[in-house]
Image 1 (cartoon, helix red, strand yellow):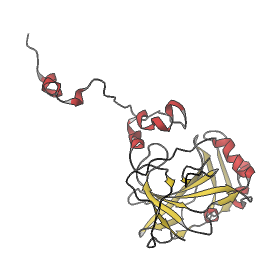
Image 2 (cartoon, rainbow, N blue to C red):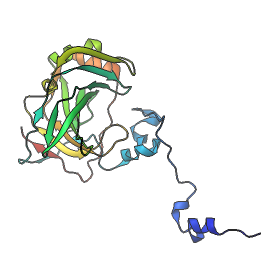
Image 3 (cartoon, one colour):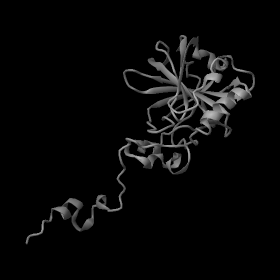
Length: 257
């Protein structure tokens, strides 16, 4: 009986090809995979959960600690054209997401990025000189041509009651897939501090699949919300902040508003 040499040749003669190691882990499809913020499905293991989440182990990840930035006087202010939106809030099981009506955008390097939604993290994901804020809002914009994202992060500190949040805190959907829609309008521009100084760097989504397609702009100065308003978000979201990631070889830049 003849024995085929093909299996041996495929793996490399005398096992010189290390790609044939029997202990090499093959990641499953991400269909039906659930990730969390703690435990065996938490941030330390996201890149190992399934094949599409491997970018979570990359070197261009977010969030980061905002420190040691290079002052860049050439960086422009971010042109924003925000119009009013009705209220569409969904609890997606990881965050409270406010889907925004079409028609609002920012300009980054001459390209238009449309505002799709904003969502919240408690506590903040980015830190400033090692310190975290109780809440951070992420405004997600997408370039229709390239698919790349520009995300603006705004810190929230405890202080005066926030007038925009006052309209919705009593209606935040508390369970997964629950929604709240209202005809009343608001303008996202009201969530931004008057001082437009910001930090900017190249990074990723802060949740799986952690795609490294994001230009980040994190405002230096926070806005305020009352202790009760912040608590309303904390009570639903709990701890939904990814730990800070290494900046690696990236440059963190600072623009004075």
